[in-house]
Image (cartoon, rainbow, N blue to C red):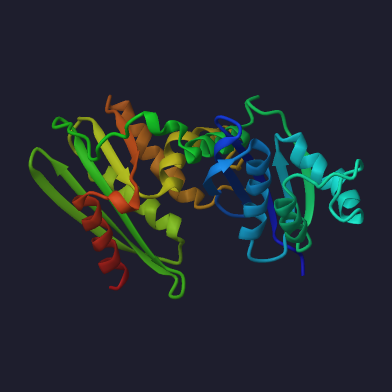
Length: 305
């Protein structure tokens, strides 16, 4: 049986070094949607965060896989491809007989690599590689550098706009789900919902956005709120690249839920062609406003019939 294929981008760092650290990994399964992982350490180093990112990514894989792991850290790549065999032979000591730094993480990474077939590749950091840039962004956010910029309180106090709260629910066991939408404008509220058959959790989120945009009648600005990073990033960052790439991902695989994305793209272009502005907001699940919780409740009810 052939192994699942996955491309992984990793990054990590501290500010200052040593100091508070963050790591991140982006998994690009073939086929499948991007999966983002990240974490924080109170007291660490750049090198420890780079190793941790690769370790966490490999440990997250449920089955032995065919992996291409891409990093901008020469320390990580050279350590795992050139130096580690000598360290192992010498009882985890360097050629100068000094204890290997970060030995605990190197040993854990060494064990994690045994399950997989891995090709390690270095890429130059901050050079325009989409997924490397995203991993860097996630690692920076994880270590808290972005905390100085206060997050806006959602929903925004924009009384002249429609606010669309998007909810989705999915049961992998029963292969069905539901979507829900709450639309608010000028003190009025409208609720929509429906069932999704033979799709995915992501397609349920796509249905919620598509139906929300289909219901809009007034030529005024729109704010859309979702807990789905896949939907928010797809609509704001990935969609244009997919179209330029003939509906293939950056790793060359067909875009999942292509027909739904095509339909959503048509609705977005129609509304923008009417002069409307659409703003997409990613909401923390633990801080969801009442309207978004209601949309998720509608989705669960629709899923259960």
